[in-house]
Image (tube, rainbow, N blue to C red):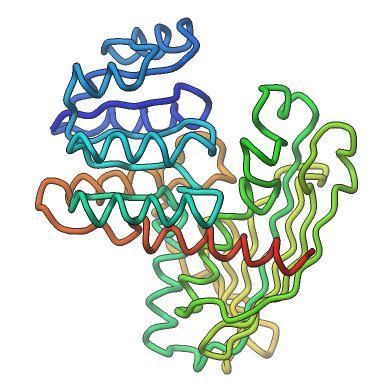
Length: 328
């Protein structure tokens, strides 16, 4: 199978490393608007370099294109690829406005191609096990959830010209960092959000970014489960994301890729075994990219839909847009 990648920034390295390990996928080309960045990635991975993504699509005719560009470019690039008969795997978020999400979903529907959003944390060992235990009712009914995203971003991180700006990033911590946890909450709870209250603020990066660095939200889902989310990029370190699932018989705690059971008597049991995801990139990102890519390419090969397509993956966009509306 023939692959291509657009956008040779930091997250592209995770995709490229995962592609290098796939025996039946050939990386044909990469594209980036910065020539030196495209050239460096192409030389490192033995493929051709482009500065115009449309030229790449029209010349290479890949089976799959990975979109790893700034958020505001995702929808336009995905739609152009789908028009050309190319399946699309897009970094999160797939869209940053309701209208662009509608357009993206329509493009998927019209194309009939395989589409995906990179919510790789669904493939972490702990998340997979938690989903199964909740479905089986091992610890009783799920009653509530709470999630904490405590990361650190400084002025240097926002110096690239698109991070920290509403028009290009689409928002702050909710859109870029907490979106993975927003997706995990809804997936594990097993229902869509019904309503929420939220507070967002730029407490520590004033004068650096025009979007929020800190957010607090309380959500109610259609199955009656209530969840709380607190997220910030103004912490002093990059801590592993913690997500607590409060069940009738105790609490399931996701801490990074690991899963624990907190019994009512205070006993703590680690549920994930010694086998871990191989982490590519920073450990607090999670190590699920190789598993997600393997699943996505299997869907392309077999002609079946990918579970986290623009309809499913786009629900995280719907959720953070609801949070922003509630905070106004």
